[in-house]
Length: 301
View 1 (tube, rainbow, N blue to C red):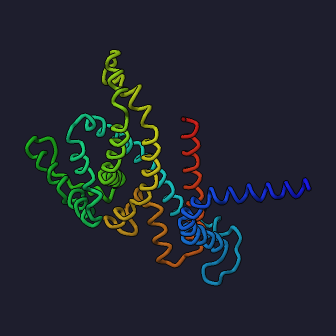
View 2 (view 1 turned 90 degrees about the vertical axis):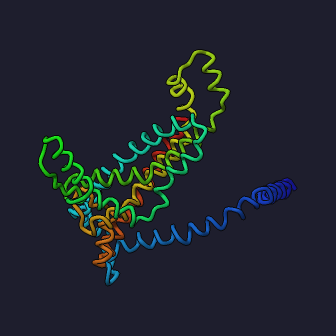
View 3 (view 1 turned 135 degrees about the vertical axis):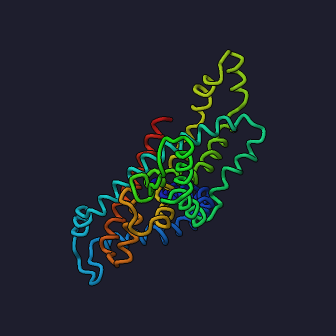
């Protein structure tokens, strides 16, 4: 009898858990099904293809991985992508915060932040056309510098091809910052305006100045916004390919040859085995980076 009572008790507990969590499971089920169908299953297929030849499907083991790690184009693309990410994310976070802090004191902050979102609404082709007009050999920047040199007598005509030299990397960085600073400012503003005003007023009553309020009250309360901005900036840094591709084509100056260029060229050449192996490596690195950021965030809390 005791065993039967225990079984009944277990069944009752399971039924209660199902009734209690059933709505949550049903709510999440469409999303989980979508992730399984459009993300996990395709990624598993890519992992399988990374171990095979592109045409015959013959099993190759880890040979494709060995090929890409000894491929100079892959090494260059990885180096440039890592460099771009490490440069752009700190700059974007810092610039966005520096813009958001003074804006938070203005009554018209809502209207002004809408202006900062304007670059996101512009078509990529339009942005690329503007950058070409500014930074080409006979672009507006060279014309301005040439005119300035004529007036001051400090230098002669300037004919620098910014997109054909190492300066192309910084042009790409400037393009990324210009386009993505807007949403960063909005996220920072949302975090700043969510801080209870009573905390700031109490600090001012105690004699805290502007910088002490920022350091001891505002910044500690922006941890959630900081984590969100870093994750979004990290993911968006891998979407700069459109600008780089439209400005300089499939084979740009080597300083802006990114992983996306490499994947595009392998796809055009139908080198799907190498592309699959590289995609698996990139996916694992991205997942590991996000998990590392999550762990650092949990420790910071």
